[in-house]
Image (cartoon, rainbow, N blue to C red; front, side, top):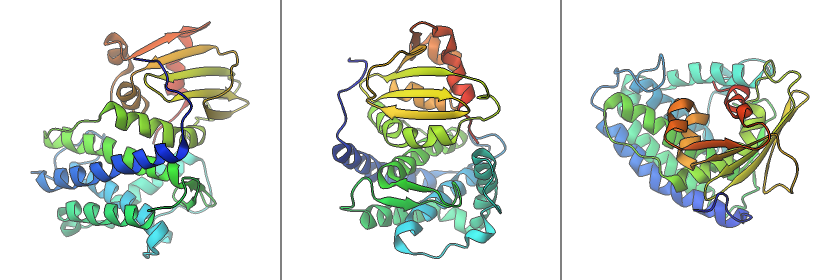
Length: 286
């Protein structure tokens, strides 16, 4: 298998992401309907299976409302001001799970199916770079439709895994699904999620080569991260070669790095291979 794919076609990749989301929505809806106990612990610390389901429902509601004009009382969910990204997302997540009461949680399978289809229908034919207003990420935050679609797919797959782990039901994340999430959403979200305290005074350039594609240049300096796909040649401090599904699980803290390394899912090279673990520490998660 090649280490990284050729230069991507944004239109083709966006359509592949839409197709992956169209396949994931009914799978997630079916999982939510089959959960035997919504109060069981989930794969997310502190949250129950029902809490994770409510979070996913809030994600679908948010992204769908960006196109369908469905009213969402954002003032009751969003924190005042425009504070640090991780603090904002943590606060939003804590409030958003309250959007669904007990009856609403029991109907999350149908809710996700309906809103997922509505999102795909409303965005049919739109260009990948179409703007999507996402106030939950920041007061003036706007993403591209390609990134937004990748994020909905990411939330569906990863939280589907959290629900399945708690409910003891099967769930898989395929390599192609993981490649699409990494390529479509991470270039936009990794810079936002940089931990400003840990990044202070740090200057590192990572060459992240996902096996089969994509390839990302992750450059951290002066408290800022830039992530570029198909970047022109340059000097890197550390090169990371990773299986797509393995990297996705490590990046979102669903699998321990040591275990993935032991299984060959991630390998480090370059001038300073020992810097590889710092990437997951510098890019924070709520």
